[in-house]
Length: 123
Image (cartoon, rainbow, N blue to C red):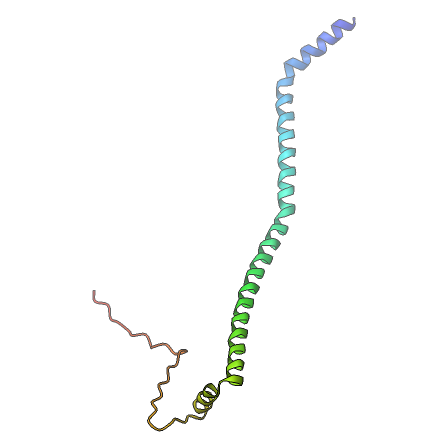
């Protein structure tokens, strides 16, 4: 009697198991996909924060390089003011708008750019 019962179970399992087997595989795949998607969503803010921090570090490094260059220029200027009387004389005359007899002074404003020239288009 045991054998017939097991045989009936096997027959029923094989006969209707095709759709259940496919649904089980689909469900397992959906669970794995949900776990992967959840992990990606969990780490996305951390990745964005790291990118923002790297961008900020690069900007700070550029600012630091600019400040170092300015420091070196100021340090050189202080050294020249302390040790070079000709440099001190040149700076003093420049700030007081004075010149020696026979001297020609040319001033170039580096901050100003020439005005753009408007051009007409011919059709």
